[in-house]
Image (cartoon, rainbow, N blue to C red; front, side, top):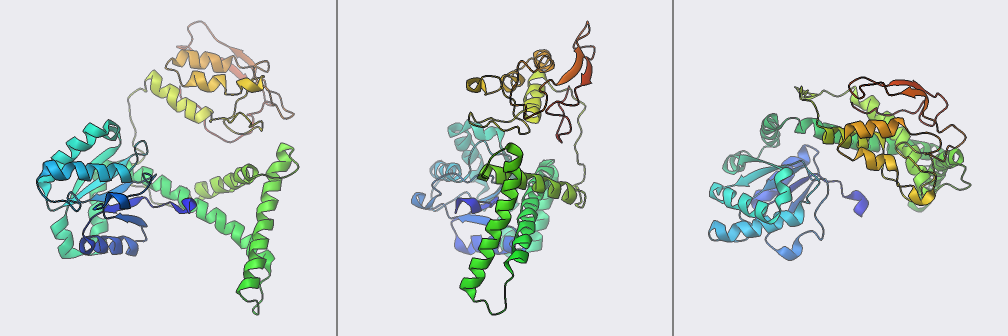
Length: 368
């Protein structure tokens, strides 16, 4: 069931009569969510939920008394539900006890300092919600809150596009399976299920073999299937992106020059990807050394450094003697390259080798 853990909204509320109207309102808006009562530690998730973006949080969760007693319990519940390192998370403090907010934050940040970098807090009038209990009112209030937290809405929109594109990709493959299955009106559930699942297996096998054949493998693997589904998925994202209404003010520009560390970190994401030691296929973001034991990619290591001049120099000096696994194409990146006097203030002189591994591949370039 782990494959279905896709909810990005959590309601942490111990009073069912106050939690259920929120769940009902979110349901009417088509927003999936998880409800956590928080009054019993043994009922909390075994692991923090990944990818949470919005939390409705009550301050008193089955405990009474002063803030010094309730704040530690609420903070503990929060850390069990929301994981660190997966921000940004907008936390809507949803309480009739505003005096509890400051002690809660202090306790949470004291025990988990990482949350300082990922959590954004807002407040919503719980009493007014109890009076309204209207889905459109809740949506309007959250949207108004988001105006003060841009570009959060842009990040959420991109994540939703990815999810929608994934659903569209699976639906397209499902349509192929349905056409092949040839279901008849007289087919009972058992026959219909066998026909359709067999057709789906056939469709997935055809897709996997397409990628396996390119890599020279005799039998497709799950990784081959992922590779070809990703290609279809990317097309769906690009086509869907042009049809959506962008949030006002996006993209948010900046006139500040990125630091060396920022450029190195961004370039590392744009140019390289984590590499498994047993992965010998040519894939976007993979960079291999000649020796298999050293296949962890020197370029990725350099790009994660803080010296942009060294980053540029190492990338420019990559040649066929440094790389392997050409799959029939040249591993020489540049037909000609030269670093002029005054580099990096003066740009390098470059000419692509059009027979290299990267030529013709779709992707992002680095920033300078």
